[in-house]
Length: 296
Image (tube, rainbow, N blue to C red):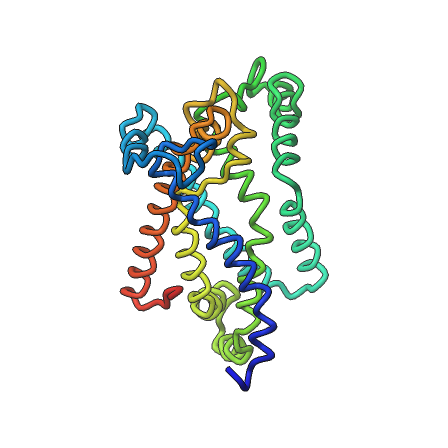
Protein backbone atom coordinates (compact mmCIF):
# COMPACT_ATOMS: atom_id res chain seq x y z
CA UNK A 1 0.00 0.00 0.00
CA UNK A 2 2.88 2.38 0.72
CA UNK A 3 4.31 1.79 -2.75
CA UNK A 4 0.95 2.49 -4.44
CA UNK A 5 -0.40 5.20 -2.13
CA UNK A 6 -0.99 7.49 -5.11
CA UNK A 7 -3.34 4.97 -6.73
CA UNK A 8 -5.30 4.58 -3.49
CA UNK A 9 -5.77 8.34 -3.29
CA UNK A 10 -6.92 8.25 -6.93
CA UNK A 11 -9.67 5.73 -6.17
CA UNK A 12 -10.65 7.37 -2.85
CA UNK A 13 -13.30 9.80 -4.26
CA UNK A 14 -15.12 6.95 -6.03
CA UNK A 15 -14.93 4.82 -2.88
CA UNK A 16 -16.37 7.63 -0.74
CA UNK A 17 -19.15 8.14 -3.29
CA UNK A 18 -20.11 4.45 -3.21
CA UNK A 19 -20.08 4.33 0.60
CA UNK A 20 -22.15 7.51 1.00
CA UNK A 21 -24.78 6.82 -1.66
CA UNK A 22 -24.92 2.99 -1.82
CA UNK A 23 -24.09 1.70 1.67
CA UNK A 24 -25.03 4.42 4.16
CA UNK A 25 -28.67 4.59 2.94
CA UNK A 26 -29.06 0.81 3.42
CA UNK A 27 -30.27 1.35 6.97
CA UNK A 28 -33.47 2.68 5.35
CA UNK A 29 -34.31 -0.93 4.43
CA UNK A 30 -35.47 -1.25 8.05
CA UNK A 31 -38.78 0.41 7.16
CA UNK A 32 -39.73 -2.75 5.25
CA UNK A 33 -39.96 -4.46 8.66
CA UNK A 34 -41.76 -1.59 10.40
CA UNK A 35 -45.05 0.26 10.34
CA UNK A 36 -43.17 3.35 9.25
CA UNK A 37 -44.52 6.74 10.28
CA UNK A 38 -42.54 9.76 8.99
CA UNK A 39 -43.27 11.70 12.17
CA UNK A 40 -41.68 8.93 14.28
CA UNK A 41 -38.73 8.30 11.96
CA UNK A 42 -37.02 5.03 11.13
CA UNK A 43 -35.85 4.27 14.66
CA UNK A 44 -39.11 5.30 16.34
CA UNK A 45 -41.59 3.40 14.16
CA UNK A 46 -43.21 0.19 15.40
CA UNK A 47 -41.56 -3.11 14.41
CA UNK A 48 -43.88 -5.52 12.52
CA UNK A 49 -41.38 -8.08 11.20
CA UNK A 50 -42.40 -9.87 8.01
CA UNK A 51 -45.97 -8.55 8.01
CA UNK A 52 -45.59 -6.49 4.81
CA UNK A 53 -43.90 -9.36 2.96
CA UNK A 54 -46.75 -11.72 3.90
CA UNK A 55 -49.25 -9.06 2.88
CA UNK A 56 -47.63 -8.75 -0.55
CA UNK A 57 -47.46 -12.52 -1.12
CA UNK A 58 -51.13 -12.95 -0.21
CA UNK A 59 -52.19 -10.01 -2.38
CA UNK A 60 -54.75 -10.88 -5.08
CA UNK A 61 -52.53 -9.06 -7.57
CA UNK A 62 -49.33 -10.89 -6.53
CA UNK A 63 -49.26 -13.56 -9.25
CA UNK A 64 -50.36 -11.07 -11.89
CA UNK A 65 -47.41 -8.82 -11.02
CA UNK A 66 -44.98 -11.76 -11.03
CA UNK A 67 -46.37 -13.08 -14.32
CA UNK A 68 -46.24 -9.70 -16.08
CA UNK A 69 -42.75 -8.91 -14.78
CA UNK A 70 -41.36 -12.33 -15.72
CA UNK A 71 -43.05 -12.23 -19.13
CA UNK A 72 -41.43 -8.91 -20.03
CA UNK A 73 -38.04 -9.87 -18.54
CA UNK A 74 -37.77 -13.32 -20.11
CA UNK A 75 -39.17 -12.12 -23.44
CA UNK A 76 -36.64 -9.27 -23.48
CA UNK A 77 -33.81 -11.64 -22.55
CA UNK A 78 -34.67 -14.38 -25.06
CA UNK A 79 -35.45 -12.07 -27.96
CA UNK A 80 -33.09 -9.22 -27.21
CA UNK A 81 -29.92 -10.81 -25.85
CA UNK A 82 -28.75 -12.58 -29.06
CA UNK A 83 -29.43 -9.64 -31.41
CA UNK A 84 -26.49 -7.39 -30.34
CA UNK A 85 -24.22 -10.46 -30.64
CA UNK A 86 -25.46 -11.19 -34.17
CA UNK A 87 -25.10 -7.51 -35.12
CA UNK A 88 -21.54 -7.40 -33.77
CA UNK A 89 -20.55 -10.58 -35.60
CA UNK A 90 -22.10 -9.25 -38.82
CA UNK A 91 -20.37 -5.87 -38.55
CA UNK A 92 -17.07 -7.55 -37.75
CA UNK A 93 -17.33 -9.52 -41.01
CA UNK A 94 -17.98 -6.43 -43.15
CA UNK A 95 -14.98 -5.38 -45.22
CA UNK A 96 -16.25 -1.93 -46.27
CA UNK A 97 -15.30 0.51 -43.50
CA UNK A 98 -17.65 3.19 -44.84
CA UNK A 99 -20.66 0.85 -44.82
CA UNK A 100 -19.71 -0.38 -41.35
CA UNK A 101 -19.59 3.18 -39.97
CA UNK A 102 -22.96 4.05 -41.51
CA UNK A 103 -24.61 0.95 -40.02
CA UNK A 104 -23.03 1.61 -36.61
CA UNK A 105 -24.23 5.22 -36.62
CA UNK A 106 -27.77 4.24 -37.62
CA UNK A 107 -28.01 1.48 -35.00
CA UNK A 108 -26.36 3.50 -32.20
CA UNK A 109 -28.58 6.58 -32.67
CA UNK A 110 -31.80 5.19 -31.08
CA UNK A 111 -29.94 4.64 -27.79
CA UNK A 112 -29.77 8.40 -27.30
CA UNK A 113 -33.53 8.84 -27.67
CA UNK A 114 -35.10 9.31 -24.23
CA UNK A 115 -37.77 6.88 -23.10
CA UNK A 116 -40.37 9.64 -23.08
CA UNK A 117 -39.61 10.48 -26.73
CA UNK A 118 -39.68 6.79 -27.68
CA UNK A 119 -43.13 6.30 -26.16
CA UNK A 120 -44.27 9.51 -27.85
CA UNK A 121 -43.11 8.08 -31.19
CA UNK A 122 -45.03 4.86 -30.53
CA UNK A 123 -48.16 6.85 -29.71
CA UNK A 124 -47.82 8.88 -32.92
CA UNK A 125 -47.09 5.93 -35.20
CA UNK A 126 -49.69 3.60 -33.65
CA UNK A 127 -52.47 6.07 -32.97
CA UNK A 128 -55.80 4.27 -33.66
CA UNK A 129 -57.05 6.70 -36.30
CA UNK A 130 -54.30 9.16 -37.25
CA UNK A 131 -51.26 6.91 -36.85
CA UNK A 132 -49.07 6.21 -39.88
CA UNK A 133 -49.27 2.44 -39.38
CA UNK A 134 -53.06 2.45 -39.00
CA UNK A 135 -53.56 4.58 -42.12
CA UNK A 136 -51.13 2.44 -44.14
CA UNK A 137 -52.83 -0.84 -43.18
CA UNK A 138 -56.24 0.65 -43.90
CA UNK A 139 -55.12 1.93 -47.30
CA UNK A 140 -53.95 -1.52 -48.43
CA UNK A 141 -57.01 -3.25 -47.00
CA UNK A 142 -55.37 -5.33 -44.24
CA UNK A 143 -57.56 -3.75 -41.56
CA UNK A 144 -60.77 -1.75 -41.58
CA UNK A 145 -61.24 0.95 -39.01
CA UNK A 146 -58.98 2.07 -36.11
CA UNK A 147 -56.09 -0.12 -34.99
CA UNK A 148 -56.25 -0.54 -31.21
CA UNK A 149 -52.68 -1.76 -30.69
CA UNK A 150 -51.81 0.59 -27.82
CA UNK A 151 -54.81 -0.50 -25.76
CA UNK A 152 -54.54 -4.22 -26.56
CA UNK A 153 -53.14 -6.17 -23.54
CA UNK A 154 -51.88 -8.93 -25.86
CA UNK A 155 -49.81 -6.44 -27.87
CA UNK A 156 -48.21 -4.70 -24.87
CA UNK A 157 -45.33 -7.14 -24.33
CA UNK A 158 -44.45 -7.17 -28.05
CA UNK A 159 -44.39 -3.36 -28.23
CA UNK A 160 -42.37 -3.13 -25.02
CA UNK A 161 -39.75 -5.71 -26.01
CA UNK A 162 -39.23 -4.94 -29.70
CA UNK A 163 -39.10 -1.19 -29.24
CA UNK A 164 -36.45 -1.83 -26.58
CA UNK A 165 -34.51 -4.11 -28.92
CA UNK A 166 -34.62 -1.47 -31.68
CA UNK A 167 -33.39 1.16 -29.23
CA UNK A 168 -30.63 -0.85 -27.57
CA UNK A 169 -29.21 -3.34 -30.07
CA UNK A 170 -26.59 -0.99 -31.54
CA UNK A 171 -25.36 0.22 -28.19
CA UNK A 172 -25.36 -3.31 -26.81
CA UNK A 173 -23.15 -4.51 -29.66
CA UNK A 174 -20.30 -2.14 -28.71
CA UNK A 175 -18.90 -4.38 -25.96
CA UNK A 176 -18.95 -7.40 -28.31
CA UNK A 177 -17.18 -5.42 -31.05
CA UNK A 178 -14.56 -4.47 -28.48
CA UNK A 179 -14.12 -8.14 -27.57
CA UNK A 180 -13.91 -9.10 -31.25
CA UNK A 181 -11.12 -6.59 -31.81
CA UNK A 182 -8.93 -8.80 -29.60
CA UNK A 183 -9.32 -11.91 -31.79
CA UNK A 184 -6.00 -12.99 -33.33
CA UNK A 185 -6.11 -12.09 -37.10
CA UNK A 186 -3.93 -15.10 -37.87
CA UNK A 187 -6.85 -17.38 -36.99
CA UNK A 188 -8.95 -15.79 -39.74
CA UNK A 189 -6.06 -15.98 -42.19
CA UNK A 190 -5.63 -19.69 -41.49
CA UNK A 191 -9.37 -20.23 -41.85
CA UNK A 192 -9.38 -18.47 -45.23
CA UNK A 193 -6.55 -20.69 -46.43
CA UNK A 194 -8.62 -23.71 -45.40
CA UNK A 195 -11.56 -22.36 -47.42
CA UNK A 196 -13.79 -21.31 -44.51
CA UNK A 197 -16.69 -19.00 -45.38
CA UNK A 198 -17.52 -15.78 -43.49
CA UNK A 199 -20.23 -17.62 -41.57
CA UNK A 200 -17.86 -20.44 -40.60
CA UNK A 201 -15.22 -17.94 -39.44
CA UNK A 202 -17.80 -16.16 -37.29
CA UNK A 203 -19.16 -19.43 -35.88
CA UNK A 204 -15.90 -21.26 -35.17
CA UNK A 205 -13.53 -18.37 -34.40
CA UNK A 206 -15.33 -15.16 -33.42
CA UNK A 207 -18.17 -16.65 -31.35
CA UNK A 208 -15.95 -18.88 -29.14
CA UNK A 209 -13.55 -15.95 -28.66
CA UNK A 210 -16.23 -13.69 -27.19
CA UNK A 211 -18.00 -16.45 -25.24
CA UNK A 212 -16.60 -15.29 -21.84
CA UNK A 213 -18.02 -11.81 -22.50
CA UNK A 214 -21.38 -13.30 -23.54
CA UNK A 215 -21.57 -15.45 -20.40
CA UNK A 216 -20.70 -12.53 -18.12
CA UNK A 217 -23.38 -10.29 -19.63
CA UNK A 218 -25.91 -13.14 -19.57
CA UNK A 219 -25.28 -13.67 -15.85
CA UNK A 220 -25.75 -9.96 -15.15
CA UNK A 221 -28.94 -9.92 -17.24
CA UNK A 222 -30.35 -12.92 -15.36
CA UNK A 223 -29.53 -11.17 -12.09
CA UNK A 224 -31.94 -8.41 -13.05
CA UNK A 225 -34.75 -10.65 -14.25
CA UNK A 226 -37.38 -8.98 -12.02
CA UNK A 227 -35.96 -5.52 -12.55
CA UNK A 228 -38.23 -4.42 -15.41
CA UNK A 229 -37.73 -0.69 -15.80
CA UNK A 230 -40.41 1.53 -14.28
CA UNK A 231 -40.38 4.46 -16.68
CA UNK A 232 -41.17 2.72 -19.95
CA UNK A 233 -43.79 0.35 -18.52
CA UNK A 234 -45.50 3.24 -16.71
CA UNK A 235 -45.55 5.48 -19.78
CA UNK A 236 -47.02 2.70 -21.97
CA UNK A 237 -49.65 1.89 -19.38
CA UNK A 238 -53.32 2.74 -19.78
CA UNK A 239 -56.55 1.54 -18.20
CA UNK A 240 -57.22 -0.95 -21.03
CA UNK A 241 -53.84 -2.75 -21.08
CA UNK A 242 -53.33 -2.73 -17.30
CA UNK A 243 -53.76 -6.50 -17.05
CA UNK A 244 -50.48 -6.92 -18.97
CA UNK A 245 -48.62 -3.69 -18.14
CA UNK A 246 -48.80 -3.65 -14.34
CA UNK A 247 -45.38 -4.84 -13.14
CA UNK A 248 -43.65 -4.81 -9.76
CA UNK A 249 -41.89 -1.47 -10.30
CA UNK A 250 -45.07 0.38 -11.32
CA UNK A 251 -47.00 -1.17 -8.41
CA UNK A 252 -44.27 -0.05 -5.98
CA UNK A 253 -44.57 3.50 -7.31
CA UNK A 254 -48.34 3.54 -6.95
CA UNK A 255 -48.43 1.96 -3.49
CA UNK A 256 -45.43 3.85 -2.14
CA UNK A 257 -45.66 7.37 -3.54
CA UNK A 258 -49.30 7.73 -4.56
CA UNK A 259 -50.82 5.84 -1.61
CA UNK A 260 -48.04 6.64 0.93
CA UNK A 261 -47.60 2.98 1.93
CA UNK A 262 -43.88 3.43 2.48
CA UNK A 263 -43.20 0.25 4.46
CA UNK A 264 -45.26 -1.92 2.12
CA UNK A 265 -43.53 -0.59 -1.01
CA UNK A 266 -40.10 -0.94 0.65
CA UNK A 267 -40.91 -4.59 1.44
CA UNK A 268 -41.86 -5.22 -2.20
CA UNK A 269 -38.64 -3.57 -3.40
CA UNK A 270 -36.57 -5.66 -0.97
CA UNK A 271 -38.38 -8.84 -2.05
CA UNK A 272 -37.55 -7.94 -5.66
CA UNK A 273 -33.86 -7.38 -4.85
CA UNK A 274 -33.53 -10.64 -2.90
CA UNK A 275 -35.04 -12.67 -5.75
CA UNK A 276 -32.68 -11.00 -8.23
CA UNK A 277 -29.70 -11.76 -5.97
CA UNK A 278 -30.69 -15.43 -5.71
CA UNK A 279 -31.05 -15.67 -9.50
CA UNK A 280 -27.67 -13.98 -10.00
CA UNK A 281 -25.91 -16.43 -7.67
CA UNK A 282 -27.70 -19.40 -9.24
CA UNK A 283 -26.85 -18.49 -12.84
CA UNK A 284 -23.27 -17.68 -11.85
CA UNK A 285 -22.91 -21.13 -10.23
CA UNK A 286 -24.43 -22.83 -13.29
CA UNK A 287 -22.00 -21.01 -15.58
CA UNK A 288 -19.06 -22.29 -13.55
CA UNK A 289 -20.53 -25.80 -13.52
CA UNK A 290 -20.63 -25.82 -17.33
CA UNK A 291 -16.98 -24.73 -17.57
CA UNK A 292 -17.46 -20.97 -18.12
CA UNK A 293 -16.02 -18.15 -16.05
CA UNK A 294 -18.47 -16.58 -13.60
CA UNK A 295 -18.45 -12.95 -12.55
CA UNK A 296 -16.98 -13.91 -9.15
